[in-house]
Length: 386
Image 1 (tube, rainbow, N blue to C red):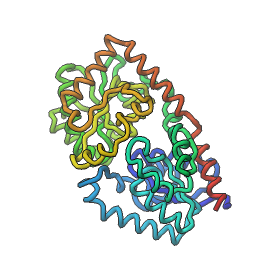
Image 2 (tube, helix red, strand yellow):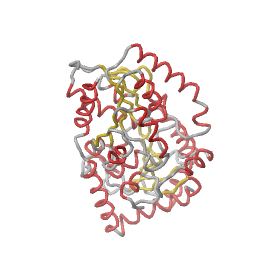
Image 3 (spheres, rainbow, N blue to C red):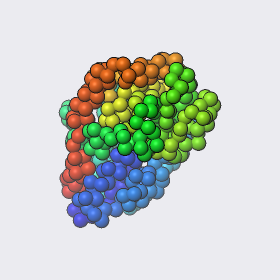
Image 4 (cartoon, rainbow, N blue to C red):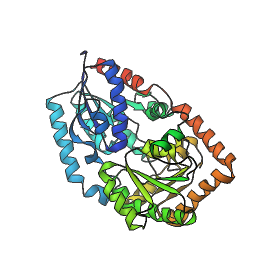
């Protein structure tokens, strides 16, 4: 095995870039001269990653029009990347999330004798169980972020390692609310609602308008409330436009990035289903999970859903600990009402908030491991097998 292996990686969208950046920390601790390249974002670039394409080129979601409009471009990128990696062969390829893009690429590379690792087990326990066959063909090893996943994969003959969820070590068990508010120039007694409408272009199209309509209703009921939206920089202007269209141009404050600071500072959050909901749970914040997508995408996804929950906090707690309002149920009135319920609980029912925080603290503890080092150890073993 080389002292400093060559690693190829693909991370899709902002959440994958964050996870991959943490993984690179662990590998660089093992191999300071590590060379890494492929598709990545700013978090990976800060760790010396050479991005041939930016990760936001892969940020699509759904089954229908959102994907079909980009399919030719995505297939062209994947083919070009595959050919480049088959010519300049890495010691290992690591696909970080983005399973629709990565698993097919991993299968081709593995068939050519390149070791492959998939980081973040696709949620076959929640929906699309048939995907397990594709995982078996594609990955030499899977790095799992939830403790029940390795046993599930082993039952299908897929080697896997539980490495914990990297965000559980990055986010403190007791977030510093006062410091976050000071950073955002908020007062300690301000009532703050965070709105996180997603990090994909399609999410801004389908989710941001209804979230801001809900925020309008919340503001009408509580005129002093502070509403803050952390925006992915590439979508900042579109989010501002959506807020203005809802009549909130002078009310909503849109900040670039800083999602963790905003979550630490807020009293409650209206949030799109996805990794951000787990981040909100790790910050111990009450939340209302909402989601909308293209109607055809929703119809197809609902047919493949295996559990009654959609949001990660509810899935991991095996209970509806926070409300979920999905597709038609995600009306402005319902979303606003659920947010106001949490804000009222802050004032009048602190026991409800304390019970939620206790539930989320237990979840946090179950996910807290030395993820970068555990992942690097597993990758080192895979490279040694080559």
